[in-house]
Image 1 (cartoon, one colour):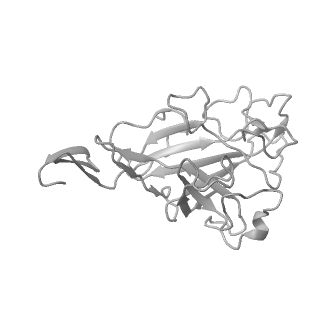
Image 2 (image 1 turned 60 degrees about the horizontal axis):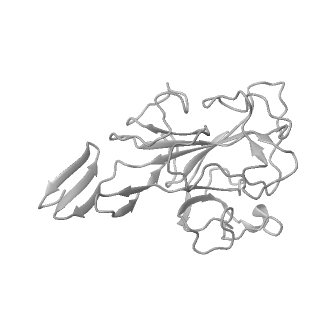
Image 3 (image 1 turned 90 degrees about the vertical axis):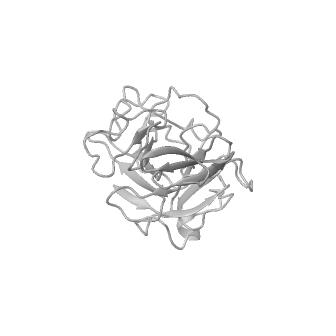
Length: 256
């Protein structure tokens, strides 16, 4: 199941890692149900009851999904947030594309997520590539990129360094093995894990879940499209650094 979720809000709020803290240490792009707030204690905050609408395609889905944001940093340290746009063929305002992928093996039983289920992928403090798989980036063409599988070549763990006329696409794939007991954990990761023998570019739950996490859950995947086709115009000590469809340019005096 694949659907688009338009941007609900961009804010310094993270009820998962920094519950109740306003502002949170870093900025997020949030999509989904409109009852999203800084706390969202699952013991008292029932999303279907509290939300009256959602920014996602399916009106029944009041879940919230959020990602970190991407910034362009100029040579003088000036920062500009990179906007998001929808995946090709979908309609929406920024946001992300969400996938719920079942197993392609009909013999594997899949357990639906329990109410209040939470999980986290990634590390906001990471400054080098991670040994963990399932997060990758691709430099996109203007249109038509259906021949390359997610997180396979030409995808990489680092952001592309060349101009990307169709934007940069980030793929975030969540674990598919659950401990069967906890809907969350102190680090928001330990109650789930990736399956053994699962490859980085597998589609759906594959591999074997360890005894500690024996329950197979659907594979959740995000696609985030960063719109680097817009022009960032920044004054840098008398010259201008310009980002456009042809890449970077430095123009002295008059600007871009």
